[in-house]
Length: 413
Image 1 (cartoon, helix red, strand yellow):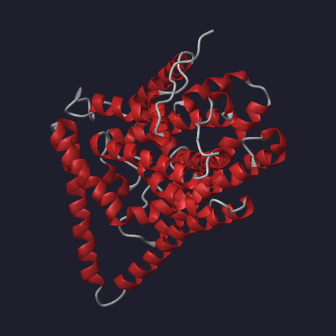
Image 2: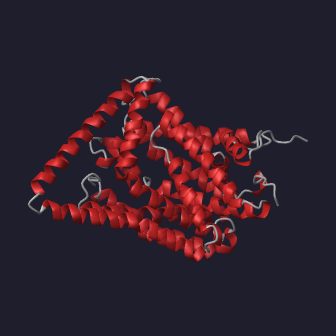
Image 3: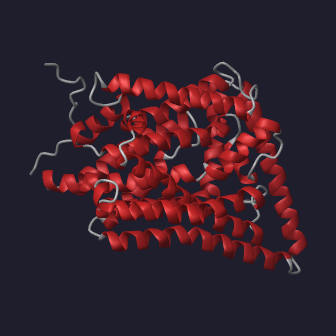
């Protein structure tokens, strides 16, 4: 009981790896925009300056992908948390400490990623949420999802309160002064975005590093963490609830629940996603108003609902014996390696210190590049895992978690 050992490859949940592999594609389709656009531009919502195929591609991703796949990754993280902790409880007397060490190592990866490679990192947020997860180690499934829903609702309420407070302020005597302050903030943000385009397209690595740090500080320190961390934590808790209930680790016994996820996910998800795609292109995050609060609310419904539908469809295909989805599993087993590779490849390709192709391609072309890289990762992940037990970063993560170098090569007979 005193010596913890990592999960053997044959003990992994194949369906979870398939879903994780699919989630990688969605994450890349969403992130590809911000390899060619400063993160601060996210505050202005959808980029309406595009036309033709570029506009259609961007709209499709904005409506049906953005928000849905980091939700999927968060749910998977929550399921993985339960699986890891339950197995650790069987193998060691200090399962919480082992999980904390695992999350701490993930935080180190995230910090290196966010500082030295690309600012749109999700790993640091997962690490923060992971530490908070330790408060829920013994919470049953039926309570975990309720806690999760509560955390997701909190940022929505804050947005509505912010919109109400600002509208009340604008209608008061100090309204003109507030409006002038907002306009000044907007101008400063536009200047920062323009600087970002310039630095990313032609700056040295040091200049990019300096700008990225100021951008990350603004995005997280300027209230972003207040909105984003509770949503991620809440989604992870819902994932943990699924993990405790065994919905995706034992899908044969939960066919009805999975079919309900597809049905209700589509019923609520598709209309709400279309509402965001039609009426939410001009959402203003900097100055919350009632329209923005409504779109923010509908978007939260779309994100979780469509995510449920996508995951449910994959589970139905898996239970139906569709062999083509098996090709997603190796990429899912190497999710950390593949995720970090996205950033390394595209920052090197686009940024001025690399090949300097920033701004040279429209959204349609960069989306094709993203799909090409993903297809290459599907092939490479399969090739790699035929020879090795873990992806390179997964091996490092496991070795650091268990404080012991793991066997990398597969045993040959």
